[in-house]
Amino acid sequence: MKKVAVIGGGTMGNGICHVFAMNGTSVNLIEMNQELADKALATIEKNLDRMVNKEKIDSAQKVETLENIETHTSTVDGVKDVDLVVEAVPENFELKKNVFSDVDKAAPEDAILASNTSSISITKLAATTSRPEQFIGMHFFNPVPVMKLVEIVRGLDTNQETVDTIEETAKLLNKNPVEVADYPGFVSNRVLMPMINEAIYCVYEGVAEPEDVDSVMKLGMAHPMGPLRLADFIGLDVCLDILNVLHEGFKDPKYRPCPLLVKMVDAGKLGDKTGEGFYEH
Ligand code: CAA
Image 1: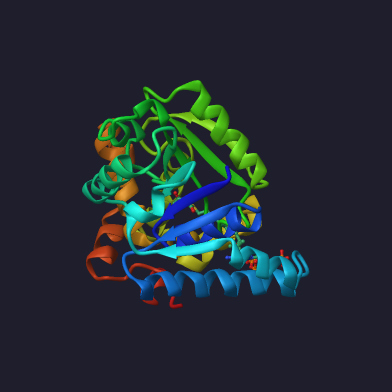
Image 2: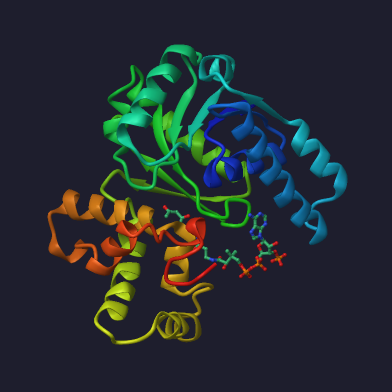
């Protein structure tokens, strides 16, 4: 990939820009306005500084990485000369559909379109474009510069060339690609979210306090973060959305979101991003 466009500069989008730019790819970072684009760039710079301080990269690499990033506020301009578009806007089907409608019209015919969605069907998103065979899920994990996995989601019509190219691209980013089929929650969230939901049920039913649930999983299962701390980190609204996708997609009561999770989201306690979830941040 010589040039990629990343749409959305939020937590996932700025992390995706960071890893492409750090590995020598020119990146067009597309945001709704310059203020949001500058905020994303400032976060990338802060995370690069963290890597310089830990001696994972040197100052020259930091400068080169930042020089590889160009910001755009127009999707049409930002995608017109790229080989790959990675969409990382909020998890809303209509929003993503509108983004891909602009992208599909403006991106070069041979460009691959990828979504970083954590739960929306790749097949359904692909079907809104004129190139479902060149459409794929490229699911990164937070914090993107640290986590080694890219879950590659093959839609019903995704062709082999697209899968091979994206797997190769993930490897060039020093990530490990794992290919999965397009079913609700793919593999990552189909396994992770029931665990987080069950941890919330433990609190709801008074089995244990959040700190104790997390200690069990950290000390007994060697998880880097307990499931409730992780839920706060991911965002309780995001966890609820993904559980709803699993529940509706499989029609299986085992995915029913815990009423405590629903109540916390209703109260606006969404975890790290609002300063309060299972923990105060
Ligand atoms: N950019 C660059 N480096 C970063 C970083 C960032 N944004 N965030 C952390 N780091 C680096 C730190 O500098 C540190 O480097 P060293 O190993 O050289 O010291 C290392 O990562 C560890 O960070 P910290 O020392 O600050 O803190 P920690 O040891 O507690 O680790 C963590 C933090 C990496 C987040 C770890 O707790 C962890 O792995 N947690 C689980 C994260 C996880 O499960 N993510 C997936 C969520 S699900 C998802 O994203 C997708 C979905 O669909 C919902």
